[in-house]
Image 1: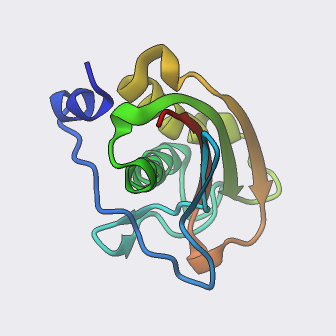
Image 2: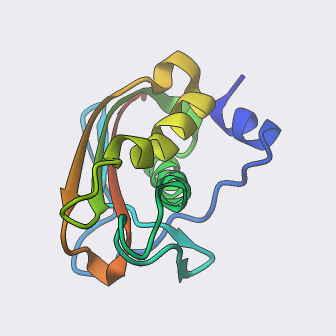
Length: 153
């Protein structure tokens, strides 16, 4: 089943690819590799779950935010290659969690995106990952994600 059909079966609608909020492009393709710029949890033009994990945002809300940011990353991949069917493999997920110094739930937060990628792509969605906690984030987002994907011509 195609990733887009799988998302539809799960009741998930792919949003339009968010536009950049600064002087950058939202994705770059070089050869058969596409990488997205940092994707935030924009949903319908609204920043969802603003604040820091461990303070204003709890782990489950962070998980939901990472899922939303992951959907935005998928929208960017679709914009880059025309169809998610052309994504051969998700290679890497980089996750930045806006959090307090004491917060240690980074892996659970990023599972929001990782679970989405595996749901959409099956084994092709299994990926390497880095989870970093940071003290400041653009626009008070609680999470920011970068996705790297191998694509077919």
